[in-house]
Length: 392
Image 1: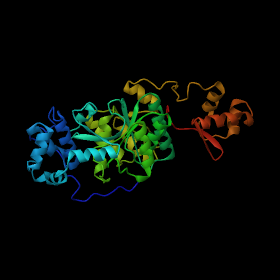
Image 2 (image 1 turned 120 degrees about the horizontal axis):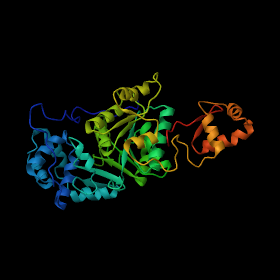
Image 3 (image 1 turned 60 degrees about the horizontal axis):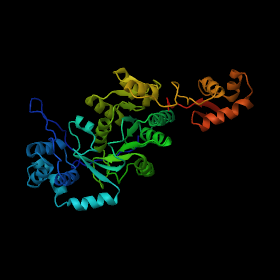
Image 4 (image 1 turned 180 degrees about the vertical axis):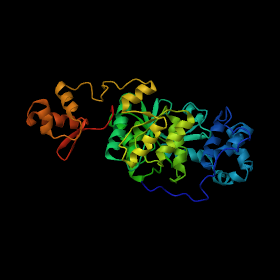
């Protein structure tokens, strides 16, 4: 698995939440960001990187508005636990922060605003706002998360890319974390069909992790949006990825796990989804594969097994992809192409396909080439097989 950045003991936040029997946890008050002054105060507060948002929420609940909350923080009312955040926001000027965001092509989406996703309020610690590079989150709907292993298999990568294509074709926005492996494949699949996709980062939007995905994330921002609760300049850290995963789950109608070990980050995303009441879906893999352990355990525990995009769309009550058949083959294929696809039960030599269809290999090869160019089959050592792309 890709090495994750480490977090110092000073930076890593302590566990959140109240002890059993204490009063209900705090929440952001209604109308917390109601004026332009409140929005500017929220922008400053969002730079605090609070070690436990619920502590800040408790102050907000008491004083009512972002402006009053910022004043309370400045006067030390956030308590000893809020001193690090207080130091970070001390002296920050919202005008300068806005100028910096503008220079980076980024904007701040404060809670209570029209672009702030209401589904984030299902979290026990929703962010005070989001830093967004790209299109409006208000129109990038409906959304479904696709997550999985960084060190994924070839088959897993193809499945994720196929899901991205299928969801994009159906007008559904794929949400993922911008990481290597399954995340990258899902984003690329959506981009393949010119569809928007959303990447939620565990760093500032100007410091993508891994750095090798910078070009991909630029493309995601052009087609959809790159999102983070962390302000620009914040580098990736290990503890920020589970926090990022809660936003991935909260933004989405459901979470699909393609591959992952028992302890992978994708299982954290699934746990967040279950906590939020979102359905969890999983694609099964070989029982002998370590990368199939996570999805198979989820299925055994009650997650819905899917074979591809059609199953997913049906289970979520969304319209199926236009022009796609139940088997995942584009509806425009002719009878010869369909027959060839149907004959590929596994890695198959062209001679075997020709024999099964009663034709010569010379007649079959052009069809196999057309199917390969269409992304429906792939060639491995002179043999052909159907691409494992579900309904994508």
